[in-house]
Amino acid sequence: MTLYLDDLRVRHLGECRYDSPLSEMLTTKQTSPHYVAEGDRVLLEDTVSMLAGHDVPPEQVPSFEAAGPRKKIYFDPSSVTAGILTCGGLCPGLNNVIRGLVQELAVHYKVKRILGFRNGLRGLTSEHRDDTVELTPEHVRDIHNAGGTILGSSRGNQDPDEMVDSLVEHGVDVLFVIGGDGGMRAATCLSNAIEARGLDIAVIGVPKTIDNDLPFTDQSFGFQSAFASAMDFISSVSVEAAASPNGVGLVKLMGRHSGFIAAYAALAANGADIVLIPEIPFALDGPEGLLAYVEQHVRKKGYVVIVLAEGAGQDLLEDADLSHRNGKATDASGNVKLGKIDDLLKERITDHLTAVGLAPTMRYIDPSYAIRSVVANAYDSVYCLRLAHAAAHAAMAGRTEVAVARWRRRFVHVPLSLMTSRRNQVDPDGDLWMSVLETTCQPAEFGVQREGEKVPSGFC
Ligand SMILES: Nc1ncnc2c1ncn2[C@@H]1O[C@H](COP(=O)(O)OP(=O)(O)OP(=O)(O)O)[C@@H](O)[C@H]1O
Ligand SMILES: O=P(O)(O)OC[C@H]1O[C@](O)(CO)[C@@H](O)[C@@H]1O
Ligand SMILES: [Mg+2]
Image 1 (cartoon, rainbow, N blue to C red):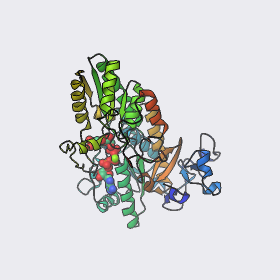
Image 2 (cartoon, rainbow, N blue to C red):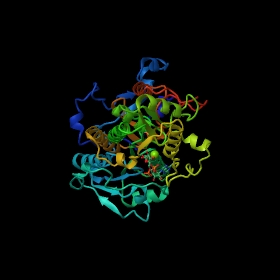
Image 3 (tube, rainbow, N blue to C red):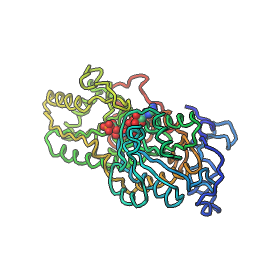
Image 4 (cartoon, rainbow, N blue to C red):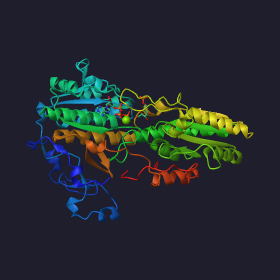
C-alpha cells in the first residue's frame, strides 16, 4: 500500500480561535528527541532506503500530524460537553484511559461536563441514551486500580442517525470512542453521519485491542499487560508438561487474525517449543508436518510445549470438514466466530502419539478472558494516560475523524480511514517472527506453505 502525504492529513472542524489553557507551557517548546512541536510532523517511514524511495522534497514525504496540546484551540472549553464510550472486547487499561481523559478535560481544560455512555454504542441508542454517567475527577479517582471498564462495553451495530440524535440531545461537542478495529469503524460511521448533518462535533478514536491488530500504532494499549499475563500460563503448562510422561503442554491464547499475543507471550516465557499463529498456515500430516515434529520433540526431550493462537490453522478445520467446529457464524458486531482448532490439535496429537507408542499426558489451558481482564501494568498505565492526554488535546483543537496513536515512539494523529484500512499482522518475514523461530528452534514452516497465503509485509 503506497501512502502519500494527503492520505495522512486529518480533518479539522475549523479555525482555532481560543487560547489554550496550556498555551503558556508551550511558548518555548520546540522539536527535540523528546518532543514534536505543533507545526512539525512525524515521518511514516523510518529507514534511509524507504525515504530515498520518495522522489519529493522532505516536506512532501508522507508524515503524520504530531499529537499534543496546541497554543490555540477550536472549542471554548467552558461550553464543552464531552462524551466517552468503550466498545468491543475488554482490554487492560480501559479505565486508565477514561480516567486520563476526565482528568485532562476537567482539571486543565475545565470543560462544562463529561458524560459516560454505558455499554458501548448501545448507550447511544434511543432506548438507553438517558442511562449516562456523570464523570468527574472524584468519580474516576481510583478506577485505574480495576480491570474492565466502569462504562461497560458491548458488541453490535447501531443506527448511526439514532446515535447522532443522542449526541445532539446531550449537547455533546466532543466524543471519545475507545475501541478496536470495529470501534474505529463505528467512530468513522458516526463522524460521517455528523458531517452529513452539518454538526460541529469532534469524534476522536482511542485505539485499543489486546490482539494488537490495529495498524499505524507501535503497539495498542493493554497488549503488553495481556501478554505478560499469558506468559504465566505458558510457564504453568511447561512445568506440568515437563513433569508428566510424554507431556504435551498446550496453551490457547486470543488472537483472531493476528498472532502477536502468542508470539510475545512465547518469547517472554521463553519455554515454548512451538508457536502457531493465524498468519502462518501449517500442515498436520507428513514428514514435515506438525505431528511428526511434536513426536520428534517428545522422543528427544520427553515433552513439548505448544502456544496456539485461537485463529491459527482455521483452514485445517475446513479441510477436515469439521463444520461442527467451524460454525462460520458471526458475533453481533459481524466478527467471524472461530472454529475450535484447540480441539482438533488435542485429538490429532493424542491419536498420533498414541499410535507411535508415546501415549501423551495432555496439559491444556485456555486462559482467554483471564488475560484481558487484568489491571493494566505499569507500562500500559503510563501509555494509557498519555494517549488520553493526546486525545483530549486533539478534540479541543477541533480535530475529528482521527485516532491518537504512538508511532515510532512519537504521539500522532492518524485519520480513522487509515486505522481501518488494513490489519496489523505478524510478518513472516519480519524480525519478530525471526525471534520466535530463533527462540523455539521450530522450522519456518510445518509442511508446504500454500501459494498466495503469505501476508504481505507492510508498515507494521
Ligand atoms: N463497519 C462498522 N460500522 C459501524 N459500526 C461498527 C462497524 N464495525 C463494528 N462496529 C461496531 O463497533 C463496536 C465495536 O466493534 P467490535 O465488537 O468488533 O469490537 P472492536 O472495537 O473491534 O474491539 P475488539 O476487536 O478489541 O474486541 C460494535 O458495537 C460494532 O457493532
Ligand atoms: O468478548 P468476545 O466476544 O468473547 O470476543 C473474544 C475476542 O475478542 C478479542 O479479545 C479482541 O478482539 C479477541 O482476541 C477474541 O477473539
Ligand atoms: Mg475487533
